[in-house]
Length: 235
Image (cartoon, rainbow, N blue to C red; front, side, top):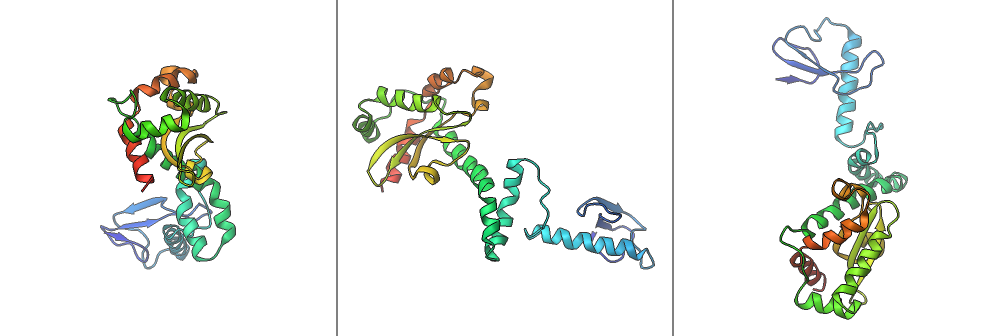
């Protein structure tokens, strides 16, 4: 049984921490007898109370102190803080969190699309309506491949190459995005096919030779998935 404050009885666990200038949080668990008795040190009881209050605040997403390190870990803490800021009308907090939300949220969106765009049974050419649209907007399937490959090779540093659909113009377009910037949020294009050109996507097999990776990736493109995305965004 867990006792969140008050007296620690035999056979129970007292969750505490903090005190003595330590950071609040789940620092230790005192198991068994002893604990903080009714006649115990009032300072220890006060420290326990503070720790539990701060823990409750953190669980509600309104903790005043961010303990995460690194951009991605900061992004994990961004959502509850953003919700708290929005509820309080704290525009400054929302604006400050935008880079973390863009990086981590964009990374989730991009990779969710990327994994479904690939298949061990992929490759070849698309069929039907998508192939006709590619020929209409790029001249031929080979010209489309050349254009998307060139755009992806040309990404400076890390980013993505994309085939997207312009809903206003009703046409297919290729584009590049830096880092984890999401295609639709950045350009307005609906993402159909994404190619990850972060170096970690290909280094183990192709080292830093990005063109070799881009030549090989066409052998695993899942055109059925790309076609489904194309048909869905036209409805």
